[in-house]
Image (tube, rainbow, N blue to C red; front, side, top):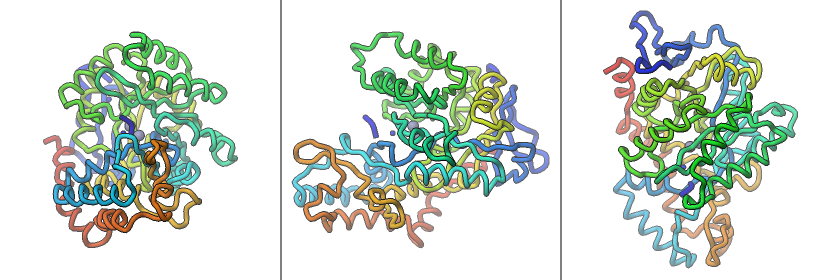
Length: 414
Ligand SMILES: [Zn+2]
Ligand SMILES: [Zn+2]
């Protein structure tokens, strides 16, 4: 299926509840702060680092449609009905497993959005590492443009593991070997379990770890993305870390996962002598909800700090305090919105959604609609979904989904 913190046993010590400062510190130099509670958090730092975000070069599964209808059981019959109608109009059965969508932002729009957030909101120099799923096209393209020529060659690597797959952020591959590495990583992902040598993953990670500039992050480790079940997922995470943890440089606090999961990740990191790092995982048009703070002047220096000095300062941006489900919905809506000002090929939602045609060949939806535009009924259902993200309906949802209370309780250590 595709689409999509260091000290043993004393991981997180709460800062005393004095003054406006609300941060948590591990026994090493790692800290987590929240800009909306601690406006001075950036003091003393010179650079912000945006890690883990996606561009239109990323292929994402369409699972969000079934996720959305799960949360919105009232919508389920509507979606099923629309699916049947779509079939009647196009002759094609919706095949979510073989379909994918691509996020709306082109590599340069994504790079600018992330850098601007750091420069304008934090008044710091911005370093950006873009990590599409199993693809390095975005950084390779950006390296040919003067303004972004120092962008690291990074990827979010899908690593099949037992009954599931994990996502590893592999940042800052040596640019001359980027393509060769990508081929090896992709070959691993595609390899059937039966033919895959038992130690291959560990050997590849060891080789990557030998490259001093490379940063290996275990992205959203506690997210049971492939739905194998919570307990099974946790066992697999343990197995993975027991064997490969020595080559993993940090565990990610993910900007699109909820507060509880991130807290559990901090505890996990503590148990495994790992540090935590930021990863916004932006897919839409809202910049990463967390960044790293550093005094490094280059991505290489930043990697040195994380790997050798074991230092990481995670800063959550104010958008993280918004109700989680509302943010997930917004991210979904970003995928099905039209952007008339964007470059051709990424303006209309149906140019960014891909589905196999009657012959099984994957095509943008625009090619599948009989008259070059979406059948009225498909447009109607998308309109309903989009409406949920607009104006009054959305504020209603925001109230219903308000989990600010949960965040507050978690911050207070309840
Ligand atoms: Zn991921
Ligand atoms: Zn991601």
